[in-house]
Amino acid sequence: MSELVLDRLRKEYGSFVAVDDVSLHVREGELVALLGPSGCGKTTTLRMIAGFIEPTAGRITIGGRDVTWDPPYRRDTGMVFQSYALFPHMTVAQNVAFGLEMRKVPRAEAETRVRRALDLVRLGHLADRLPRQLSGGQQQRVALARALVVNPGVFLLDEPLSNLDAKLRLEVRVEIRELQKRLGLTTVFVTHDQEEALTLADRLVVLDHGVVQQVGTPEELYEAPANLFVAGFIGRSNVLRGRVVERGRFVTEAGLALAVPTDGFEPGAAALALRPERITVIPGAAGNGVSGRVALVTYLGAATEYRVTLDGGESLTASMATPRPGDPLKRVGAGDVVTLTWPAETCRLLAPDRGAPTDEGGS
Image (cartoon, rainbow, N blue to C red):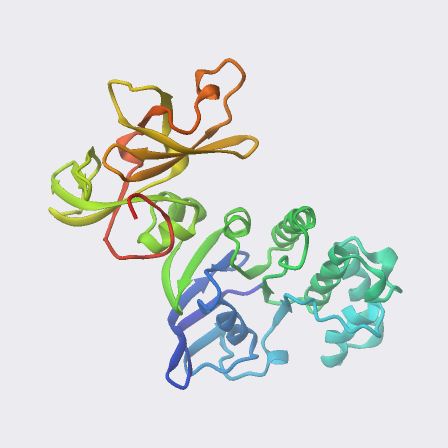
């Protein structure tokens, strides 16, 4: 395993900038997820690391060695593609051995390494099968074995779970994380799925329009997003726009006054982000809190969501554990008056840029 360093990496296609001065240090044995919407530059960044795309500017080092202009086979990387990219006419064992043949590894050593790689992904008994004789999950594990067999210093995965159904995606996700931990692989994982990123990664890199928006642990990005884009992309957030009027006091555009932490914010325009699961719904009009009428109740199994229109016209979405029979909340439906409460410290004030789509109040 090796550390990976990206230094001001940039990729231009004519006047279009796909990746804009991305710098990142991936430590040995760390799994970092590149996360963002389609077109944000995450796959382009991964392909520059792998050597399939040449950067316009910047530098890539693996294990301290500058590989910026090296061809893929000299980069000490193993890559798993979204489409698996298996050769249909080759057996499982032949597919896994392909990278070793390109590196001119002696046959006896290659056979040993192929067996070891297939055992790692629990496919040793299918070594003689063709790809078409395998399930989607098995094909994905063959692709993993093919990348692992070359003993890569850096392991690269480009949305490897997107072609699997929900159940298989969860199973393979767990397998990837267990393999990565057991082998101590330095790994870069590209995904647009925030749940995958939150559950798999040691750190997340959120990209938008080729620019890094924030880097941090899943908890850091969820609890302390740097801007509205991150707040809306990592999890879901209610957003209320307004102004900080004095220390500890925020007033929404509709005139709702709220007590919030305002450290670092001078009086002026701001946006308040509030996670739906931080809000408690109380049936009826209570003395403390914000009142409104339920616009929509959505049953989600373990959780139930309540879309509430506040008295000033703004809206908030609350997510709570589904109430049990006998709980007064069980009888709450559209049109009913409720009170919403939340701890002031769970509010996050952010600069009032437009950012990513969120559960916006009053918009």
